[in-house]
Image 1 (spheres, helix red, strand yellow):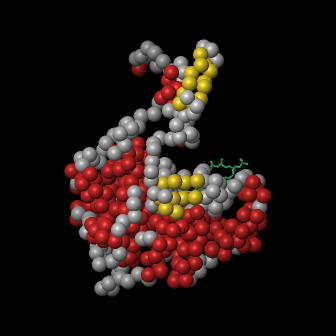
Image 2 (tube, protein in one colour):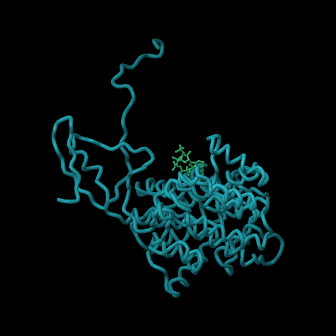
Image 3 (cartoon, protein in one colour):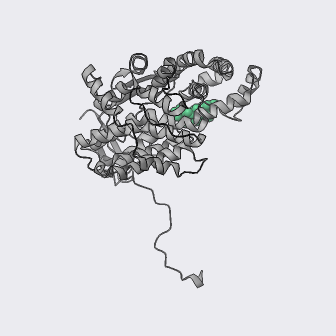
Length: 421
Ligand code: ACO
């Protein structure tokens, strides 16, 4: 065996040979080294699955869905086409895309009882909490979804979920605004319909500016998948119990709700507002370098180069601002980026703008309140979660997720009656 690792156990003097495949060893193989296990909080260096969906090279700043560079997809593809690609592994032919678009478009309506459920939330309910609960509730409307071994049934549930996410997101938004919910318009494209459900008032038809529709398509494409991130891992972990996909995706939404995952773009806006003017940038940067705070929207666990999504978003901001007028915070963001990219502190630590540095500026220009930012992320990420889920349930190697622990508590204590404690 050449691709192998020899481990000498100094406790016993025994040597063990362990196979290396794809740059990994199987943690289970370590059991033969005196019952050894690995300890890896946050899965920093542990592969949990084999996946053929998304490829990232953080050093080079490369992101590919099913082998296609994100730059080409963002420029030439539509969001529904990217959904098809992520879920099926290949770009659709025009017939396949027409069928897929038809199927998604005809599942955009929600059952009236889901609408009633949503109206029951408090006036100030966070739209992400409303979305998580509504997606979870869908499992009770489609009990057949629990038959996850039937490919046709899986297709139906996947179609439903991709179709209904914008409707749920828009209803949650309208609820927080105290405005009547707007039903889907199936004459419109996926993103144009979403904008209509969000912003339509008394006009007969709502026609969104095509440049804004395109910007939203691009944003959804950029967020569509990012391999084994926190929420994809949550979907896989919950899905590994073989629960229905609505329950598994609801878990992913819960993970995305957290500030360490979906909330950074809001923090960028707050930071830019606090800086207030380009004159204040040097002192702000000094504070960051002194360790007082972080430059939000910079740095990434995986990317040690410019996040390829940030480059595309930066371009999209220009298109959006052409329609909406320039967000005054843009000038501060651009100057901040310029200064940071030339500063030794950021250069030596390989800190570059990430996807969140500019996305909040676009969302704000589109008049979304900050609470909606993660909802937009969730709609874009849904095909990724479902592709990950489908790959999981069709992978014979996968088992129910059940990590080990290192037990640090007490052992074998005698119960003490309450009057003697
Ligand atoms: N500003 C200033 N310094 C930073 C920043 C930052 N944004 N990010 C990292 N550093 C510094 C750290 O202080 C550390 O310096 P040191 O070696 O002198 O101690 C070094 O760079 C390495 O940082 P880590 O925290 O070890 O990097 P890690 O990979 O764990 O963190 C993270 C990545 C969480 C994204 C971090 O860069 C960060 O907090 N960025 C700001 C928040 C943000 O933009 N998050 C969005 C990420 S993208 C997304 O989730 C969709």
